[in-house]
Length: 378
Image (cartoon, rainbow, N blue to C red; front, side):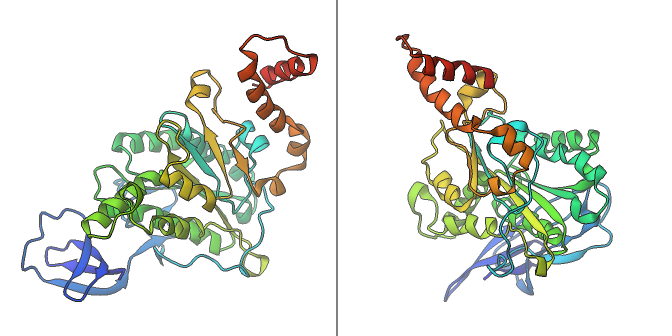
C-alpha cells in the first residue's frame, strides 16, 4: 500500500487498499479519462515531492508541481511525502523562541522553535490572520540574519480553500516581500479529496528539507479539519468502517504522524527545527468535537480564538483562560518574561470576575482593582 500507479490515460493514483480480489486506488486528478478495462501500471515508487531552496517564492500543488505560471523548478532534490518522525535520541527539548511578532501571543502563549501550537476557533475569528501575520513578521528577522541558521523559512499549506483566497494570500505576501522566504502548497476546494489529503504531508516534506539541513522552518496547516473531511470521503468510498461522526478509526493517526514530524533536532543531527502551527475550525465554539479533541492532545498547546471577543474588537481574539503553551515558556525571552509577569493569570481571573460583576452587586476593593486592571490590559 502507498505505491503510485499510472493509468493508460496518464492519470496517476495511489494504492491504499490491498485485498485478496481487488486493489482500492485513489486517483490524483479527473476520473473522467478512466474507463472499465483500462490497464493500470505499477510505478515502483512511493509518492515524493521536489524539495529545496529553489521552491522559495513558488506556489505548488499537493504533488509539488508549480501552479503559479512561472515555469518549472530548477535545482532540487526529491523527498518522500510520508516519512517516519525523528526518534527521541535525535531530538532536543524546545529552548529557542519563535517570535510571531504578535505581543499577545509572544507574551501570553509563547512559541518555541520545534513546537506544535494549535490555532483553534470558529470561522471568521482571525485564525488565518495570526498565521499570515507570523509569516509577514519574519521579514525583519530574516533581513537582519547574517547566518543561514538564524533565518526562519515559512511553508503555508492551504487545504480546501477557495482559489481566490489563495491568490489573495500570494498577493499579500508578494507585496510585503515575504514570498522570497516562503513556499505555498495549495490543494484548493476544487481539487480531488486525495490531493487535499496529501497536501499537508507534501508541505511537511518541504519543511523537513530545512529542518534536516540545520536550518529553521515554520509550517502552517490551514486547516486540518478540511483534511480530515477529505480523508473521511476517501475512506467511505474505499468502504472502510466509519466511526464517530463517520470518520474512520485511524483519523487520530492521520494527524499524529503528521504533527510528530515537527521537531527540534539535537546538536549531533544538525540542530535544525520545524515548528508547526496547525489550524482547526470549530463549529459554534465546540472544542469537545471529535477532530479538536484529537488534535489538542497531540500538540504542545493551543491558541483559542472566540467570536465574542472578536466582535468586541479584541484582536487577536485570544481567550486567555483556554489558551496555553506547554513548552514555549522555556523558550521565552527573559525580557518578555519580565514584562509578562502575572498578566496571564490576571487576565484569566478578570474574565471570570467580569462575568459575575455584570449582576451589579457591591464589589470589594480587591475585586474592583482586578476589574480595573483587566479592563486596562484588554
